[in-house]
Image (tube, rainbow, N blue to C red; front, top):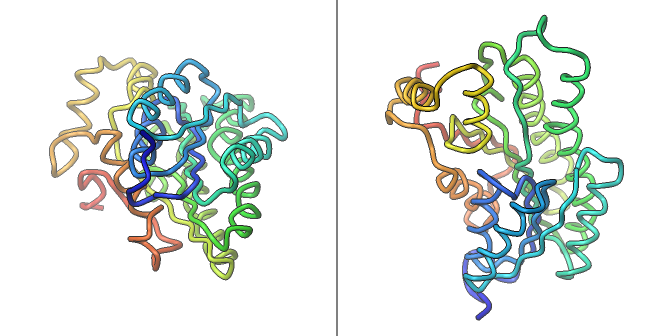
Length: 260
């Protein structure tokens, strides 16, 4: 039975980084809210699993396995989703990576890789999506930044730089394309229990339990977030509940930045 009701009924969404973590949770949430969802990631197995979950709940999903850092990949992803579902209303740019190094520890190759994934691919997806949204009379872009879009952290030079750029890129999109009826907002999660966070602890040589406990201690709510909690914030910004919200950064971090 196809989902025909919900906050996103009749909408078409493209979600990057959709094979796991925040992207996967968002894609499943969108499917349950009535959207037809294009799923983009280079993890083909993960994409198939998320697509199956959406379909089993009565939603529509199309996995599009692509490496978005490849030239032309963003345009191809948008074209495939539009060809399958007839248009594009929502883009969620959730694909990302982290390397925990100082400037002195960061090679040119590592810097280029993080910039390619976190910033250039995201920009290309937005650039490809905007003309398609114009065709529909408007749309919503939600980028996924980080608490470190707003403040920096230790040994995070490439990640903090790119996530700060994502937040300001999103503001620029909001200014330029508000007249087209396109809203652009950035969700800035704090530490969230995803494969990316678990990989980060591994990079730092921390046991998972110690890493999660340390992150929890730094937040008034006393825990890390779940992907579903971040997906709920993304859904709000993508939906008609946020029709007068654009150019903003929404911090979802359990109060981690509340103390400055």
